[in-house]
Every structure is written in C-alpha cells, then in structure tokens.
Length: 505
Image 1 (cartoon, rainbow, N blue to C red):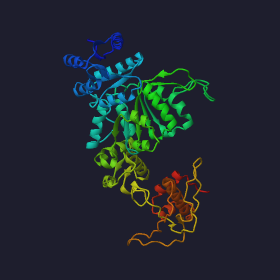
Image 2 (tube, helix red, strand yellow):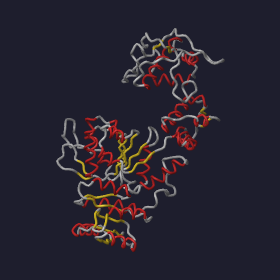
Image 3 (cartoon, rainbow, N blue to C red):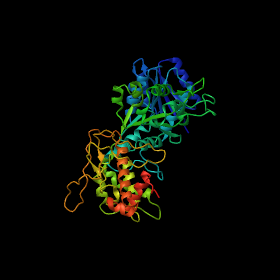
Image 4 (spheres, rainbow, N blue to C red):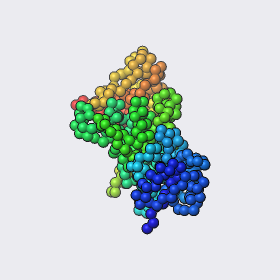
C-alpha cells in the first residue's frame, strides 16, 4: 500500500526541510518546492492527499494556490503556514477554502495533529452520502432550504474553519453543529456543547480552561475545562453573544494560540478543537454597540451558516411531526393526529420554531384521548395556537392595583405584574364586552400605559390568578372550574401542575 503524498510549498529552506523531515518520519511521501509555478506543475502531474503552503511565495501568494486547489474538484485538503500574529491572513485563507493553518514558528505537535486530521478527510467518503445502515441526518425534511443546508454542511464538515451558526431560537442550531461534527474527520472524538449564557461569570475561566488542585478555595482536585474535554473534537459555543467582554479576550487568545492555561498552572497546554459558535442575536450589531469584540467576531465568523425558521420551510412539517410523534409514542401505543390537525399546524407561524412544535405536540398529547390528538388539544386557550391575551376577569380599571397571584412554586421567583396605577388591573365587577351571536361574552382586555417588562412571567401570573379564582369560586371542584373557564378537565389539571396550584385542603 502506497503512503499518502504531501506537497510542501515554502521558500524558506530551513522551514521546508523541517516540514519534510517531520512528514517523512510520519511515514508520508513528500514533494517540496519553493515557488508557486513549480507547485502548480507538481499538483497537475501527481496525486496528493495534502498540500501545505506558505502564504508568501517569491512568485505569488499561497492564497492563490488555496483557491486553485479548492476549485480543482479533487477534494484535496490544503493547509497554510502563516506568520506569527497574522491571524487575519489565516482567516482569509480559511474563507478561501483552506482546511486549516499553522503559525510560525511551527510547533511540530500542532503540525502532526493537522496532518493527521487532513489525511482522515482526504481518505473519507463524501460526507453527504452516509454509509448504508448509518443513521440519517439529524436535520429532517425535504424542503429546498433543508436540502441546501445539508449540502452546505457536507462541504463544511471537511474543513477545520470556525463556523458561526445563525438562527432563531428553536431552529436547530445544536443539531446542525452535531451534524457537522458527525460528518467530519473528528466524528470519533468528543462533541462538547456549552451554553455560554448559563455559566456564572465568576466561574467562566475555570469552566472553559480548567484548574489545578488548590488553585482556589474549593478546588479539591484538578479538573479539565471545556477545551480539554473537547480535545481532538468539536467545541460548540452556544449563545456566544452572552459572553462577557473579559471572557471574550481570553477565549480569543485560546482560539488563536490553540493553547490554554489552567487556573493555578504555570504552563500552557496545547488543545486541538474545532470551534462552532451559535447565536440568535446579531453579532455585527453587538460589535457596533461595543458589546462584542470585533477581533473575536472575525475569528468565529469565518464561515456563516444560516438556519431557516420553520415558517420558511413548512413543507417539512409532515416529516417533523411524524418524527416527534414517533418519539412521544411507544411501540404499543402510537400517537396519531386526527384529520385536519396538520392543516391547523400549517396555518401557524411557529415563532419558537421546531422546539415550539415539539412542545405543542407534547402538551396536546397530555390532553388527548387514547393518543389521538385533535385540533382542540393543540391549545390551552381558546383553541388557538397563538398565545392568547388573558380574557378572564380582566378589566381596564386604571385606579386599582393588580390582584396578587397565588404563591409561586417553591424556589421560583414571584411573577412580576405591572405595579403602576396605570397598569392593567383585575376587577371582578367589570362589564362584559360584546361577543358574536352564540358565543359567551368576554371581559374587556386590559389597557396598558406601562407594558410588562417580562411578558411570559406576567401572563403566567395572570393565568395563575384566573385559575385560582375559578377554583375558589367552585370550592376547588376541578370539573366545575374547568367548565367555568371553557377548558377540559385535563387542561385544568395540567395547568395546575405547571403553576403549582394546590388544593388548600
């Protein structure tokens, strides 16, 4: 079996010799040259599994060779050698199609890791065609948007370039990141997903880089951070826009140098991770506002991957619903949709995207009879999927203060209600509004001079207040309370559990 062949292009004789010796000791065949013209000739004459080129050559730029190799259709990874501190050149090369880069002075350990990863990519089958018997893509659907996304992921999986995934909440950013990892040469290494917005600022450095035993109070043992845990694999920085500026500086250095220092350690250690970041926020605007570092933005946003919201690919709804129902059901008890339910779902905009679709179906299953979800089971309020405004016992009585809701669940903060005199208030004696013939009259909607600062918490508090009033009015007879509010007994029971409303007796 012939050894993989590598083309080295560099005009510095000492560095070229170092690269040749290192690659030969790895059992590879090496051809080397010092000019762009000779490199083009060798590339046309021989079959290479990897090209390694300097950025500056006597007769041109290595960047031109990157573009030519990438456009050749031979699927050969090409890596670049950049001058120390020339991060901008590395980013430009990655955008042009380079597999990866190494900085001068070349660290041999880092070079070996790069070569091994590149040769895995060179030897692998096209990522877009999974082997027979292997699980299909995590990204379900057959719409044009999802097919284009799969094709783009297949191309990106063969690179080491950082990827920034952009998409609304619930659109599947982590699924896309996992799919990139699964189709890459790093698939057998760890995939670590980190929610940057969920880590207390005081713990960020320890969580990302680890710490030595005794580095601070409570550090009873040595611990690896996220970078060490993802070594050889992929590190996903979810909600990266939530990183504080101080941590952005440290993260930038770790990404550029590919080395991290544990808290309490005196030396850095090399790490080999591919960075995938994700956010639903506009990072460019945050950069303009001074809330996100521009240099980190350029390092993370080498390649941008946009996920279409569910409302732009409703053609995928049938397959998504089928997959979700299969997960919610069991072998013996399958979950099915009653006729017309899918049409109702297709008429909804899904601001929460696929995650909201999952929540809607899971909630509807709790209200369904014998695992058959009807249109009425899809919503808790008024038969509508859209969040309905509170309509029970609410009136515009500006001078009154809002009624205090029942106590929140243990450990949960009280839900804030507008406390200004001009805010919406509850008035039991409020007149009923006109309603279409055959429908019950409803109390008027509240009038807001000051809007709630936390709408979900406010609606939850209003809902808790309404349910508590209905239960008190019926002496906690749940069947009667459900009839009073025009909902099913199952819906009432579900809401009581969710809001932790207990029978006083």
